[in-house]
Length: 277
Image (tube, rainbow, N blue to C red; front, side, top):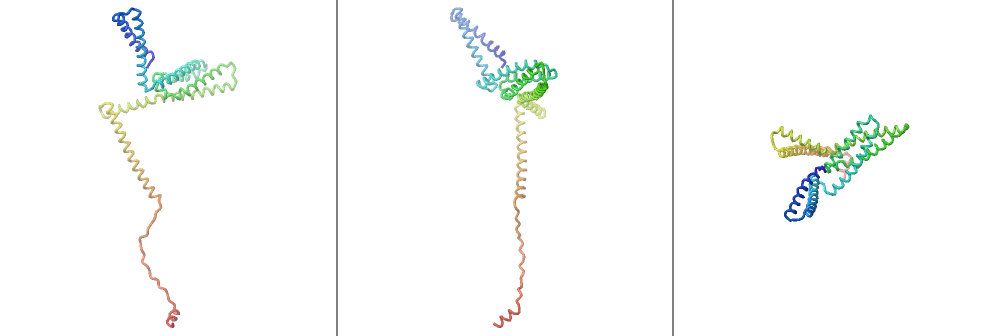
């Protein structure tokens, strides 16, 4: 929640309550003016503190954070704010006009990420790479570039370093843009879902958003189950073919050939010897 808006809400609750406490203390309880004023101030401070606790708890509940997580995020955001302030001064102290537009765009994207995270702290976990790596790299490069560019005399090595730093900053600008897209990833997914729901309602007719979403989920499950069945059938067919083709093949010959009689010739000498015996 915006701190100024939160302060206005707490003040709108505290001031009328303090006035009512003073009226009750002075007219009903017959206390003196100064005693009633002291009681009113103490009651107003207590109500302001309770309102702060309530608005803070509602804010944390809305973002799905604990107080410990919010303190951790708030600490990192305060450090990032100081870094962004230094980066703003450094970027506009550089007198290289061709890269002015790119530097302005880089600063705009960085401020966009910071403001979104400050407004919705739960986005911090999607931008951790930006806060812990890319922001520090951009700040360090720009400060060194600004220092070298202000030197009255430059040699070839300094000019090469400045050109290399400009090229690296261009690459870092692309990484920061990717960080912004990563922070907006959930919003893009939600927008695409809303577009699908709207198209589905246009094609199928009227219906509540919940019913349309349920029908879309059922149709997606049906399509996915059909695809799964087709894939399983295809896999089973392939597996059966593989088992048939990969295993060794054995052939059994069931034909029985008729045995042929083989006549052994007997020599005449053997027969004569047998008769003689």
